[in-house]
Amino acid sequence: MSLEKNKAIIRSLIEAFNKQNLATLDELIAPDYVDLTSQLRGREGFKRDEINFFKGFPDFHMAIEDIIAENDKVWVRLKVTGTHTGELEFGKMRLTPTGKKITAAVVSIWRIVDDKVAERESVYDFLDFLTQLEVVEYTEKAKHSRYYSF
Image (cartoon, rainbow, N blue to C red; front, side):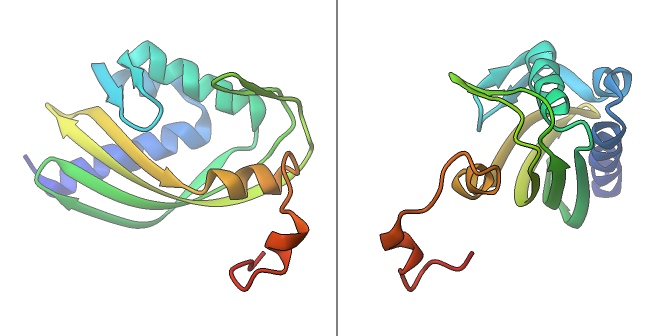
């Protein structure tokens, strides 16, 4: 296994996201893929989730800020941007278009097996995401907290 090859696979995956290229996603994602964050399983589950996000954010874009590989894992720090112009589903939550632009930091750990993406786990600030969409807002108490920095 080549660490540079694993990073190249993730770079290709990010490029496929940015171009919304489902054919390339088919080539890069393992049939038994597992998403540990959203509990999705399989290539089709992965694609359904991404199509949902593409519908919600047609101009969705990920920029790689850092990428590190070790053994079968690739860590990526991303800057994600997009405009919420389509309906978006999160579990039982359905968000109608807000027209709001978002910017988010995401850290994902991808596991590569036999040159395919087999697993992902991501960390992101979901509350900040919903706040940027103006779906939720901070209380007055939170706005006056010394931890409030938005």
